Length: 56
Image (tube, rainbow, N blue to C red; front, side, top):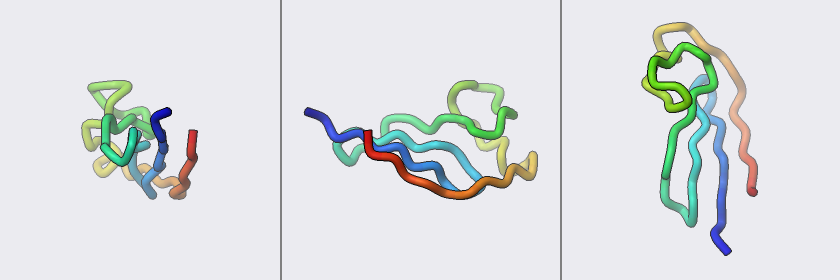
């Protein structure tokens, strides 16, 4: 079974890792023009959020 981890980066996106390989960066700020993927808009919008990690 694959090991899936979701890392919410402080003030940034959720990084999805499968078996240690980054497969996606998902928007948490709502400002991305590529939703659901992150395009870096969080840095321009002043988005603030705590970091966290979830093992799925």
